[in-house]
Image (cartoon, rainbow over all chains, first blue to last red; front, side, top):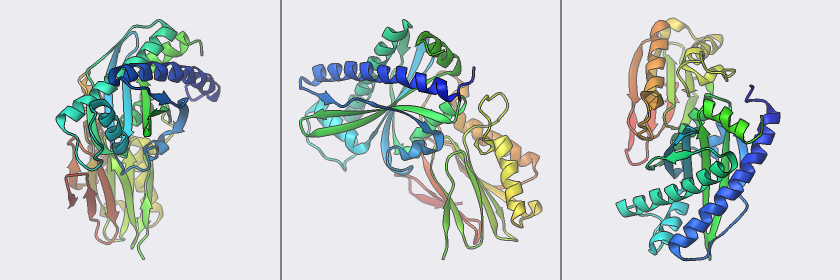
Amino acid sequence: MNFSNSEINEMYLDVLKELGNIGTGNAISALAMMIGKRIDMKVPIVKIVDLRQVPEILGGAEIPIVGILLNVEGDIDGFIMLVMSQASAHVLVNMLLGTSLNEYSEFTDIEKSALMEIGNILAGAYLTALSTLTGFKMIQSVPQLAEDMAGAILSFPAIQFGETGDTALYIETEIFEQSSRIIADFFLIPTEESYKKMLRALGVV
Amino acid sequence: MIETIKVGMADLNVAKYPNALTTLGLGSCVGVCIYDGKNKIIGMIHIMLPYSWGVKNNSNPAKFADTGIPLLISKMESIGSNKKNMVAKLAGGAQMFEVTRSEFMNIGKRNVEAAKKVLADLNIPIVAEDTGGNYGRTIIFYSEDGRVEIKTIGKGTKII
């Protein structure tokens, strides 16, 4: 099986777009329930990007961002990673904790755990969607959070993809709550073995 | 006028005096900087993975320590450098997330080890390094004197 085959990528992309839609829908419902407010979202953008462009996604390799990483185990092994600009992370924290926006302060421990909890919810929503589509069981680990340069944080998914191909897949989600706007990027990073298994289960190959 | 040439992820480049080379936001990747002080020629590679063997998608030699470093050296030689003048400096190889599933996942450490082994096999001495930790680095490599400036978020700037 050749993973750099563009035909497979196209079909895989279609299936993942569907996954992105269902997953984001699930995530928004969960989040809205948690904060007790109406949340809107845009149809997520699903892209396969050149590996070397990955650090540019959030506006440059040196831009400070927040990354939340979770292990996935079970029928599918791999990682889920969520990345957000610091500004989006602050909006999300404020939404969740009902605090006022202060873009330039560092995250407190409580704010960090709120972000990790959001990571949990979002990852869970995508995994539920994937599980519905494939019938696979997946268990997610406790999330980890890192705040650093976009290039450094994104080197993690880039390297994982680097073992299987020169392209990375990402789902960009835009969430709105009144005038607040959050952009969150989501990476699904299965191991090569699990990638094959997933493609088969999704009917791509 | 000094031109600062960017080196992307899984990419390499060379420069002559007075120009500089830079790579932004190194995480688990390793930046290998090779300096020929006699000819004032520099070369930089942004390595993502240790070895090309056993990796199916290995068409880009600059992605790996084992294929990228020799290629970088031959590019430096093609613009007038000599291997016997070369010394190396390493930066990066951080562990951005504590991943418990296996030692394999500490790719930063494995990248540093592989870069060291490849350089040793090529008889290129490592004169300085700033590797490990759990934070990102931006590096700028000057042909003037071979100094490497390392910038971080919240951990200041240093020169090796």
